[in-house]
Image (cartoon, rainbow over the protein chains, first blue to last red):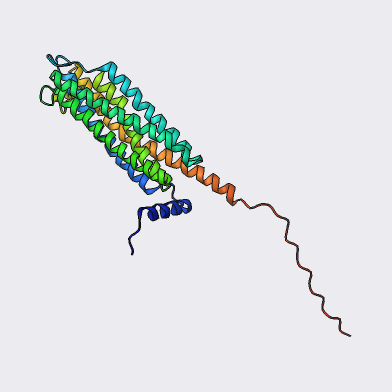
Length: 199
Length: 98
């Protein structure tokens, strides 16, 4: 079989999707199963954190910096808005593909802002003495929030790939939905983590 | 004799009911502890038990609704437009035999 270019592959996918009789695209189903596994992974981490917190005589531990609740709340709002922007992009995509570009770009930029803001917050906390080994708060904070940040970076990469395809007219509906499912997972998980870890 | 038997049976029942409080079979069963850690164990057990059920249940409902929506859409497309009854073609008349 001769090698196909990305453009040809994209066109073939678009053509086959229009004829598809599947209830859910395979890529979307795969992503949903992956997200279900990730939800259980984070559920385990949240449970462990809750028990450690409940068993601690003083929380947060003594001589440890307090987590920046107010500043992170602003970051949370930015992430939630990025989810809204992606929903607008998805809605626009079904009507006029070209109109999905701007809201999708806004979603990506807000996601990038979230990750950078988190990085700046980490830098400040490390300088104040909260490290992976300083206390159980530090260990769980960097583990849970760090894994979420890793997911956010991967989701932004997926969105960037989808946006690049959209720019060239190769983006299929299933590809956008696959990337969106992962981004909604990242956006929806964060308020839960914020409530458990920060508050 | 019957009274002794009844009292013995009652004693066995009461002992059996009280036993789990001392057994401490697992961290969640530690009913005698009413502290924050025990509450956290119970809550996280409920959380971890219900999360997959809700997730897969929600997915099942979503899939069913999607299927029903598609079936309805297909039904609209497939429903035949009522047409007039087919009219039987006139029989060719046989040539009259003289």
